[in-house]
Image 1 (cartoon, rainbow, N blue to C red):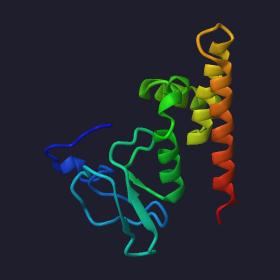
Image 2 (cartoon, helix red, strand yellow; image 1 turned 135 degrees about the vertical axis):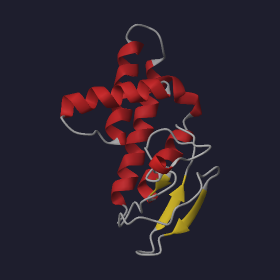
Image 3 (tube, one colour; image 1 turned 90 degrees about the vertical axis):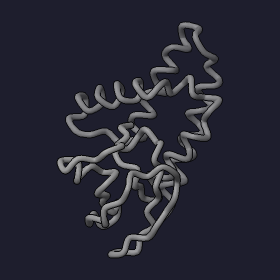
Image 4 (cartoon, one colour; image 1 turned 135 degrees about the horizontal axis):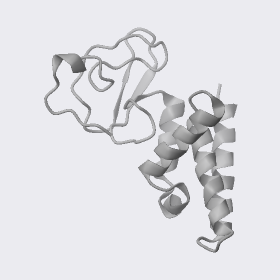
Length: 150
């Protein structure tokens, strides 16, 4: 993720400096680049905005509740990080799916794509298939829990 030390005028619309509310999409007041996790309410719609400055999956650190849950879920997967790969693997899979779908893929689509690649690698003996299946079960349950929320 890009860091900004000395912002220039042409960076005034960078998502770190000029955030948008993830709910109502209004411009929020300019802020310094975030350095730690926090949250605040949107002055227009009252939605809770979560700040996750080090997460690699969204282009902005200002997230809604669902996006925050995806980030938190991924951070809990330390023992399965082999199945998801690196930030570069995530970016590569996202680009592949964008070409395949003809539009920007969702976070879940990219994660499923990475897990499917990992499952294929287990056929060649690189990883334990049970671990990848356990990860898939856990992610499926997580996605189902997100869909049940109003």
